Image (cartoon, rainbow, N blue to C red; front, side):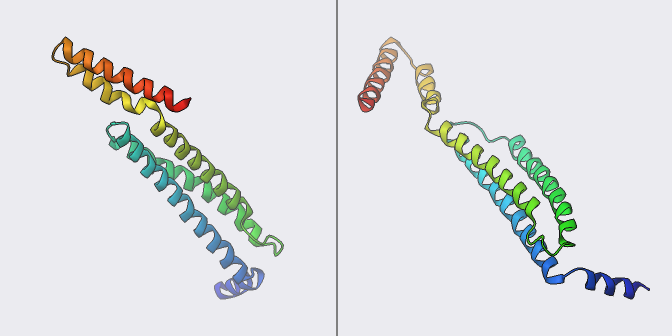
Length: 159
């Protein structure tokens, strides 16, 4: 009885078609994982540039985010499994759309990190630390002059 059911299912589902769907979904899952890891790498690089600590909480959030993305991808996979029953449903379209959306979200995050790194706010911790370390009025005036010179140079570059 069990063999008859399996043989009937093999005849009902075109196996190469099923393998194509499964392979494309596997590739999409790997692409999502790569996108999340690129975002993590970029976030760590940004934190270092801004002289911020990399907290383990941020790393746990990345793992949680990847789990959430994979749950959404799994729902797309289930929807696409229904499509495998129809020969005209060539590719796992739902999974592809979900993957494009997730990679778009991660690209936006990397773009935001790049803007933070290029921001002048990245230099503030160094400037603030210099001001705090001033031992006397002469040192403070020297640092204020350096800041003024730096701002003048930046203004000239923009003109």
